[in-house]
Image (cartoon, rainbow over all chains, first blue to last red; front, side, top):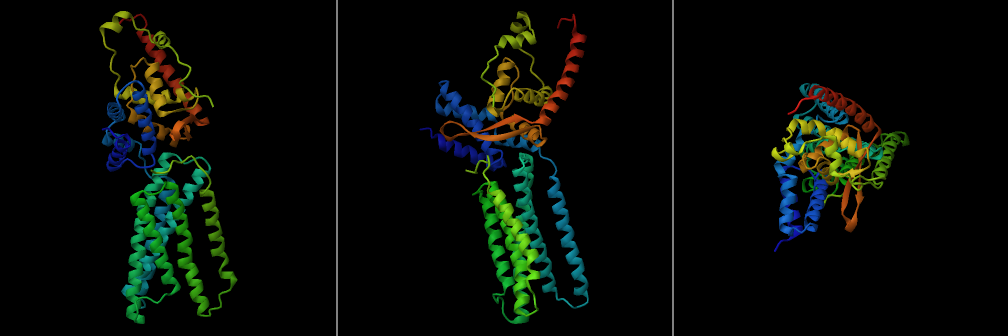
Length: 280
Length: 141
């Protein structure tokens, strides 16, 4: 016997496998398919036949994907600028530290740790800024499907990169710590920060991989990553320096405080209701 | 907001605009439109339809079929990338609307830039139409 919901579910799977993205444009295509199916059924066609006809009218997954590929453009300007800045920051960090490496003031493991962690943390700021772009576009009704897809693609790429870099950097830090301090892990605020960020990034990449939540949820998690990376990087250093009695006062906290307050403002903007259809 | 689709124009109106005599209509199947012509006319057609009120993908396809007397058929899957591109151009905007039984439809409507784009396309197509009409005046195919 024909099972309609199973047929729709199989169709969705075939579309996703062909590379048609969800929720944009898959939700809209499914809405169209259901519309056509209902019209055919009300015209007297049996359900199975109506479904097959509606699917064939919409086109096979590969051809639908090809049609959407035709409108793909180069990444939008914020993505281009952000990617360029990230590459420049990574190269600059590696270049500046290489002098200390060649002078023998920095060993290779520590050098690799600093470069990978810095590149990873900068990549996290990058996805956070893409999340902010998403919220701003959405708030001012300028979030077109093309912009959304460009931001999705950039977030996916850089979140995978950030996850890999932060985890590799943390492991390198553990190796260096064992060599110099005799233990892999000391529950230092910076270590706790790196661990928290790694967990957050793994959750973010898993969410994207298995498409459990809507694009908005992903983008809000990216802004959340901005908060965690700031606490892990600058917050942890303030705590470490304070405990070492370097005399850090309130004056050192305010830039971080302002930055975090801004992130919370963007999160509140992102939680505002929208027309977005959640991924099913 | 006004939605298109309901005020049905009889097919005779379309035939009056593009007259075909009985002989050619019966003896020759209508010429298949080239992909290029269909592609070139898609944006002006969508803009023109949306200038009458907001609409959604399925309804736009049905309207085009009806207005062209089934001679112009858009592949269903082809329409959405075009709508998305037009939205990216800032010509149209969209919103999800919940319809009966919790289903959702994405409605599109024209923006100010879209009206401007429609005006430009209208002028271009009018030039082509008047040139062809002048060339074909008195000729029988």
